[in-house]
Amino acid sequence: MDEKDLNENEEKLTDVNNDSVDSGLEEKDGVKYETSDNWEFDAKAPTLDENLVMENQDYSISFDKVSEPKPTQALDNQNDNKIVINKEPLKFIPLAIFLAAVIAVVATLGVRYYTVPNGKEGKYMNPASVVATVDGQKISIGMYDYYYASIVSYYEQYASYGYYSLDTTKDYSKQYTTDDDGNKISWQKFFETEALKEVEQITTYYSKALEEGVTLTSAQKKTIDKQISTLKDSASQNDVSLDQYIKANFGTYCSEDTIRIMLEQYYLSANYKGKFKCETKVTDNDVDKYYNDHKNDYKKIEFYYIASPYDATDDNSKNESIKTAEKIMAKMKDKKSVIALVPEVYSSYIDSQVKSSMAQDSTLTEKKAREEAVKSYESNVVTTVSGSDSPFDDKMNTWLFSDDTKVGSKKYYIDESAGYIYIVLKTSKASVEEDETYTVRHILVAPESGSNSSSSTSEKTEYTDEQWAAAKKKADSILAKFNKTDKSEYEFAKLAEQYSTDSASTSSGSNDSFGGLYESVTLGQMVPDFEKWSIDDSRKYGDTGIVKSDYGYHIMFFINDCPEYQSKIIAQIKSDRLSNMIDKAEIKVHENAIKKAVDKEKAAKEAAAESATASSPNSAQATTSASSGNN
Image (cartoon, rainbow, N blue to C red; front, side, top):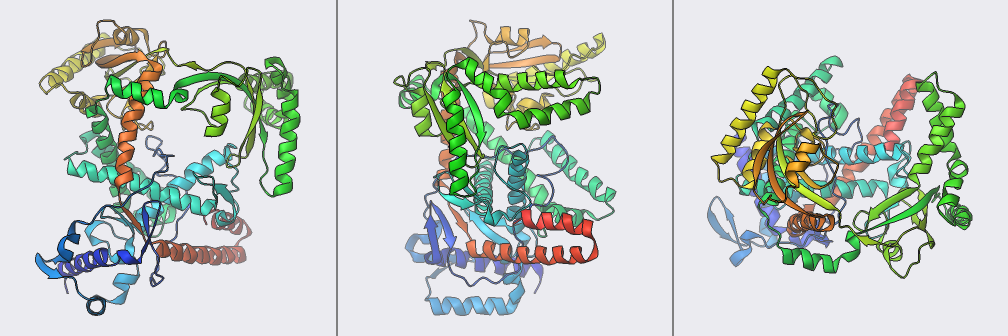
């Protein structure tokens, strides 16, 4: 049997399976999970190996923290109880006949084809490699491993800063946190769930991109090639092949194809979301209705707080943590008293910062280093947040933003996942966010010798007259190119993706941005000429122009100028409409397959750790850490 026949048979069996086994799926929160325990394949578990993607800092993934239900959709081929195979309509066959057909195909292709992942992607992926489907799009074990590792790397990084109570040297299946509904779950399960959410989001928008003919820009294609090239260089430096390097860092079933397809899907997903936001219009009535339903979200408030460690190991530890927080809260009477608590409450952090500062600057005295450290922590005890940006839950926010809660009131909030109790002193009344803001898109054309930069943060670079003239000529050319289009916001955004050297506002950066967008910009944030053009009273939607700054020429596209709360609501409504697509997506998960993969990988890592212990103490220590942390 040749490869073509293999692929055709795979597609036939997959079609039959997808349409016939829904009764064996258990639905939870809109996600269908396989409940039968008859899968026996040698899949790889979620891994924690090494970094998020690759060493190049130009690329990152941002993770959506919103948990959304996923109602199922009707299958297209359910009409008249017929299944279409090779374009010949067949009536639904009894289970016994169906099973006989499956057995016949398995006998022809071999059991391993359906029980052991082959590590391939796309049409060459065998059934055993599929751990989930999203609206019919197959998700490979390699892709799942990759996203899992990305999620874990993200949380491990922030855990190292003290944001999460997570011990990276211990088994994640035996450490606990809470999910979006406040339920206690293991970190292992949390990571698995978040990985599936990320897969679902990217795949949903990727599918939409394909439906609407959205393509990669030439700049994005070059970025993908650059990322693969970086991997090849790293592999060469480690004297291993590219496949060996990828498998060692991202999982046994992760390959160059997996990485490339993941990057393509990520950028196409970003392009679709960008297109959607460009073309989605929000009316004044939409804004008014949303504000009336979410008023507290768009009010801001100032408060002082102290963060005290929260030990959730057991009930006694929790009670002791709360007692300590209550003692601190009793001393918090006003701003002055809160600041006075800093040297005592944050003593260990201050000591650590003093040592670090003195190690970096040999001329710094301990007294001076301590003064600077204390001052730094004192400045952090006061903060201003809006309801939509608040780190607290609804109950705490209601207390904080309510007019019935008097200035000077105190309350503590326990964030078990972060490992802190936040003791809050309310120091102001809530007020609507009415500061003037503006939203624009721009294409930065920097003179050729300049580096990629943001129009607001990079240091000034000197250019020659010839370099400035060349940049102006290029800016004029790009604007002329835009004027030959339908002059829509999306056409401008596509040109920004293609030509802008400001990575902070395009998908080439790490801010989850697209199309040169600067949204809800407050006054004083950008360079003067950029801001002056943006807040001109004569501006209307769709206006364009060219502005010069120290960073180059900015080709401008005006969107709006309005109070901060209105600008944020417009952005939120667009985001909600995008999220609705996730709500409607249908994801089917082979949960037992993933579980068995986890169990097999855990056993393999434990065996590797024992082997390393026998051969080298240093090697054993490193391997044991990886084994414990990666499960």
